[in-house]
Every structure is written in structure tokens, then in C-alpha cells.
Image (cartoon, rainbow, N blue to C red; front, side, top):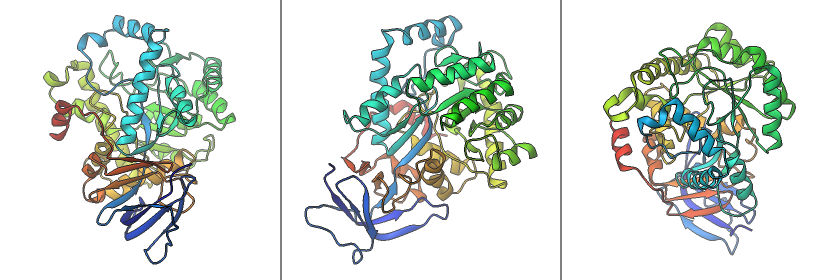
Length: 439
């Protein structure tokens, strides 16, 4: 049982697209970890035995939902030699073996707790080395430690030599390979499926590889059918119009990263008969590209091939956001955490980039990270807003995040399913933060 408490005097930032802020509100949380009442001081009667938290002058928001995360690394740049093909195979061999399992379990727990302490109360992982996030999810749900709500994908599905292979993938080279690998992942307990539909930036071997279609529409259709039969959404790494069109025709539910849109793509986002819920959602991840483009290669250590691909994909991703906004396409939020310069405590930077570079209003960016992501993941009746009957997934801040998302850099407290984390702390990487502050 959760110790019941009441937050008094908070300004609730609702997370709606209009940017509504409700001044001087009282939020009552009961012993089940649910929100029992929300209203003015006069409207909410506080039962005896409730702990009182004075939040006068502070801002209360729904817990953030990160719909695109990886948890196998911490975001620090890897040495250049680690990105060679031979080293990638060696790393995959180690991580997939018995010696890699305890390392992955330790990293995963540390990284999910870092995200939680920074205000992220729900995470969808999209590409794991194996099933370490499933194990973390099971431990959290069993009460072994307090953690965020997790939707693990297990390894993503990629073609031979494709994006994410071999470190974080199962190989699918035919429709039946795809069905088989979905079945394997589901049997292991995943609640998300991820496919690499096109080439990516970080493991590109040639200029123009990022965004190039890798998985066929027939292969993706089989994967989507198998996942949808189990009620599971399919997310696709897709970074070109051609790749995205193939994905949407196949029934993919969320397009990760994105690109400029054709009329066909716009129509399929809004009305996608093969998707699980009848439409699809864009999840841009600006943090995954923007630092690689804006920081000098002498700092990032990336080669000219990765640099050129990053520049191309950043332009495409920004065009995709513009097209989504112009056509009122649903936009969620994901960080691509664990990639180079994408730390687990900097979710607020993605909101900041969506606002400053992507053209979204601050209210729209926060809406994407709360109410939209809750809807996308099918948990809008559980979390995503500060409403009666929802889980108490809350973040208390000293400043209004709609006036600057850096307010999330140091939350006063975080609440996950009614359990309080007071004075939340994270381990920071000062050099990375100084570089990102320059963007």
C-alpha cells in the first residue's frame, strides 16, 4: 500500500495542447497510488492520515512518457575503434552470451532509474540487446524496486546487414522470418515490436545509406499482422519517404524519426486500415541527430560518412515534423536515449529541441510527451494527465516548464504510481552537458 498524501497549492500544468495551467490546486493521492481528488483547496477535503506536501508557487505536471528509448548504454560517445565491423561483431557476441547478461541487467536498472529520477514515469524501449528490459519490467512489477512503467521490445527485427544488426537485433530476411521472430519476442514477454525498415545513421557504411529501404513491404506486413494478432503495436525505424510509405502500407503503428511526407504518407498516417488502431503516429527524435550535425567532428569523433548521413536525416526529420504539423498528424515524443550524446537524464532537451527547432509550441511538445504518448501506448486511462482515477505519475517543478523545459533538469519530487521520490538525483556528465548547452 502507498502512504496516502496530498499536494497542496500546486499550479497544475495539464499537458493539453492549449497549455492550460490550473493555479493553486490540491491533488489527493490515496493508498492505492491513484489520484482520488483534484480541485481548489475549498473543493478537496483532506482525510486524516494523509501526508501534506506544500507545493505553493511550484508546478505539477504529469510524468513524462518516453516512447523511444534504448537502455543498454548511457549516452557517452564510444571510442572510434568500437564502431568497426569486427568490433561490432565482438560486442554482439559478448552481450548475447552469459557474461553479457549481468552487465546488461545492471546497466538497464541504472538507466531506467535515471530516467525515473528525471521525471520519466513510463518508457517504451525500442531495440534491446536481448531481454534485459523484460527482466527489469518483471522486477519492477514484482515490487523488487520502484521503477517506471516499461514497454520492452526486446531485440529489434532487422535484415541481414541492416540497421541495428547484429548487436540489438534478430535477423528477418523473409515474411516467415519476421513472423517467427515476432513469435519469439512475444514468448519472451515483450510488449512492443520494433523493426528497422531503413538504414540508419550511426552504423552507416556509405553516404546515403541512412534512410535507404532495407525491409520489404511484404516482410513488414507479416510482422505487423503477427504483432497485431497479439494486440501489440509495431514501431519502425524509418528515415525516408519511400521507407515510410512502405511501413504505413504494411500497417506500422508508429514511425520513428521520420522524413518529409508525400500526399500518400499524410493520408496513411491519418487513416491506416492495417494499423492496430486505424491510424499511425510520428515519433521524431531530434537528439539522435542534431548534436552529431552541430558539433565539430573533432569533438564527436564520428567519421565523414556518419556526419553526412546525420546531416541528411536531420533535414528529413525536421521536414517530417513540419509536414505533420501542417496536416495535423499525431506527434509523440521519444529521445533515442543511449545513443551518442543522448543521456537518460536529458529528456527535457528533446522537448526543448522540438520547440526551438521543430516548430512545435512548448505546450504541444509537452502534450506529445504526456497525453499523446499515453494514448499511443494504450494507457490513456491509466496515466498521462493529472486526473481523478489515473495513477499518480507526477513531477513537481520549481518553474513552469512551458516557459523553459530546463525546469525538468532538477525536479523537486517525482511520483511513480503513487510512490514518492523526494529530492531525486541523477549522475550527470558535465562535459556532455556543456556541449549540448551550446546547441
